[in-house]
Amino acid sequence: MFSNLSERLTRVLKNLSGTGRLTEDNIKDTMRDIRMALLEADVALPVVKTFIEHIQAKAIGTEVMTSLTPGQALIKLVHDELVTLMGEQCDTLNLQSQPPVVILMAGLQGSGKTTTVAKLARWLIQSQKKSVMVASADIYRPAAIQQLETLAATVEAQFFPSQSDQDPVAIAQNAIQAAKSKLVDVVIIDTAGRLHIDADMMSEIKRLHDAIRPVETLFVVDSMTGQDAANTAKAFNDALPLTGVILTKTDGDARGGAALSIRQITGKPIKFLGIGEKTDALEPFHPDRVASRILGMGDILTLVEEAERTIDREKADKLAKKIKKGKTFDLEDFRDQLRQIGKMGGVMGIVSKLPGLGNLPQAAKDKLNDKMLVEIEAIINSMTRKERRFPAVIKGSRKRRIANGSGTDIQAVNRLLKQFTQMQKMMKKLSNKGGLLKLMRGMQGKMPMGGLGGMGGGFPPLGQ
Image 1 (cartoon, rainbow, N blue to C red):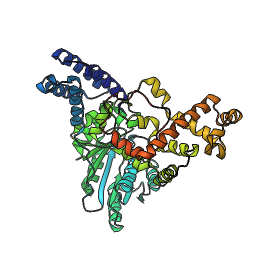
Image 2 (tube, rainbow, N blue to C red):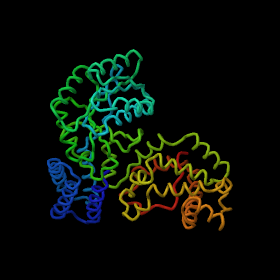
Image 3 (cartoon, one colour):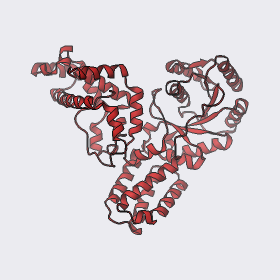
Image 4 (spheres, rainbow, N blue to C red):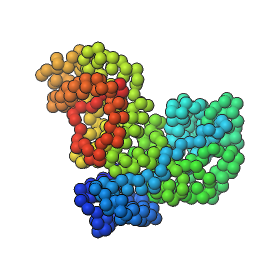
């Protein structure tokens, strides 16, 4: 998400960062470039206008004009204004009410609402340690109820059965009653979507809302629709007292206009981002972290949280003990590390959150993709157990056999062995320093924009 906008803004601000003195002329030129970058990202025009006016008013103030590093001062202004635009702080769900806390999900058809119900249930169960029941009041879309039942089983949420011939209000009320009797903490009600906003749809969801009085009413919207997402959210907010928005499909949205427009247009906070198709691909929306990502400053905090959530602690501890005992880090350990990277969103998912690496040249990004992980794992899988444990034995004929077995070539095998050697050295150093999590925490706030020019050949070990 934001890749196009991030690329444009960091280029504009990087040019400015070397400027010895800010003048009204170069501020004016910079504001014009920022305005164009925002409009191309499909940010709503009124939002762009307000954003530029605020920046311009502050930029010509004495604090920036007299700064020893005026370019960096302006970058900070842009960062702070982005945070203000998106909502200042992370707005969490209100889970303090008398259980069961009722969450009503609204949105258009195709926005990913039902999948988001499952993602939210999983997040509540795993991150908040809540028991969750889900129910479908979508009696119109074929197989909607069955879809939610299947997803509920996947995320280990309780499912309240319903039928397409029932009244949506009765379904919701019965689900809440069942949640009360089972002492469930949270009940999430999925509702029917439509292909567009219409009077019947609004009338039904208003009736549903009035009947159950949910603690949270969340609007689920496809971020790829840009500023239309903000306009649709506003139409829903005019009819329903929304408490927040969940942006879906942000992994496929290179522009980011919806995220930058919604808060300003609706006055409602973005509470979560859907960042992929899997049920664990949901993250709380932190405006300050997102602003840092947009400006290429990285997002170490989110990366640390992802690592702590996804890393297999048992394997990580076992590996740490193994290294501390002086045993060799082998290719089976390396394969485990690659799988952990996959769980954390893949190579680019990690790179986009590292300071200075989110805006690598396209040629570098083309090399840093998850196909590389697949290729490396295929090569390792084509080795015998002895070869994985003692890579030094892999010579000419063995390399040819491994290349043939993995569908690659000898150059790819040689490249992997070189990366692995670098990884062994890095592993030894990081094991002595406390592991990657400690390293990432130490990086937070210490690396300037553009501070890293590229990546080494190997991946650092995860999770000790």
